[in-house]
Length: 440
Image 1 (cartoon, rainbow, N blue to C red):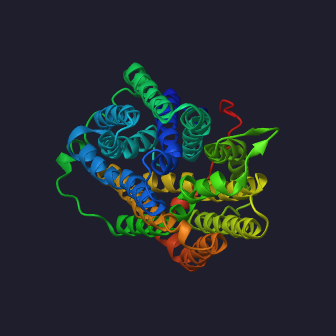
Image 2: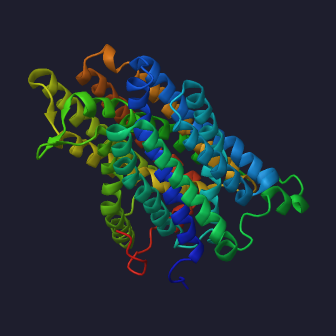
Image 3: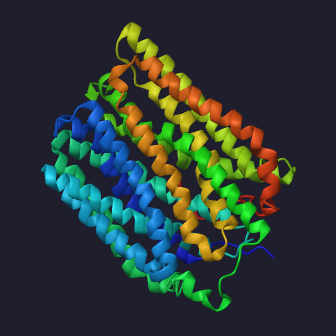
């Protein structure tokens, strides 16, 4: 019998993640422009620092996941991570180079403890084959994007119009709100979930070897993680090259008001809020007809849609080269296509990891999943640093080809990956959300 509704703990985690993502994206939307305009970095240096920062915030979850599994548990790790990130955001509000690098270090370390463990708590609210699980991650993902929607509007406006330190301080306040919510509701709504390290729970089992099925399922995680490198390496141009294009090569004046370049980064979470329920409904209808794509196939669609977005971006860049600054609507179309791709890949990926991971390696494998984003963001940032060295249509054309080739390569592997998942697809249907609270 399918249970109705969701545990109240899901909505607590929704709120905590919303505020944490508000702080993360609020800081990120300002980072590239701050380095160029306030710290006077070159585009190449700013791109490298941006890529190193956005990459390392996805490397440290590997360490944070290991410590949570072996020593602290998820709950303590989330608290430590949140405190470090709050301090980091407030340090960014001090316009000083030493504070700048110290802030980045605090944010990188804090994210490592926070990010993998809150996702594990969401999965821990449900049994392995609970059909509500994917819907839970869809709701959780909407919390991420609620914070991501408001943060560019608030932090970008404060930072670009009134002073960088105001924007960064707003990000710090957001992280503080998330910590307050966590401390207020964790005992009441999460009970004992995540308090004890997984290693202690499994100590009586000894050194249990992985089964053949588990090895194949872990292999699926690693293969899909490899292809997410190509997705996020291209997708995360939003905070770097796409922001530079919006800042200097796009006409952002509407009704006489020139809106901040960072506002474009609110489009992606806005589109997610509009489209996520639609995607959930589509997956259900296809499932009822036994035609729902497998998770690997959804990844293929994600990469293909990302490639289509950069084809449109290359056309916009060509238009700029011949006619000057382009209309604001070009980037609307690009972000729309990229959001379609993200909804095919990102929430599905989180759900797959929690389902295929053996319990004794859950946080570690979630950290490994985020490791792909480390490589992606580092490579994407370094590539963005070359934005001034080549024609913009060629720059975005390279990204389109990269995503397209990755989609074709993954398509060839789909049949093998479906076999290795050993029937897990039967639990990957996204339940109908008609009984869920209206979040849009």
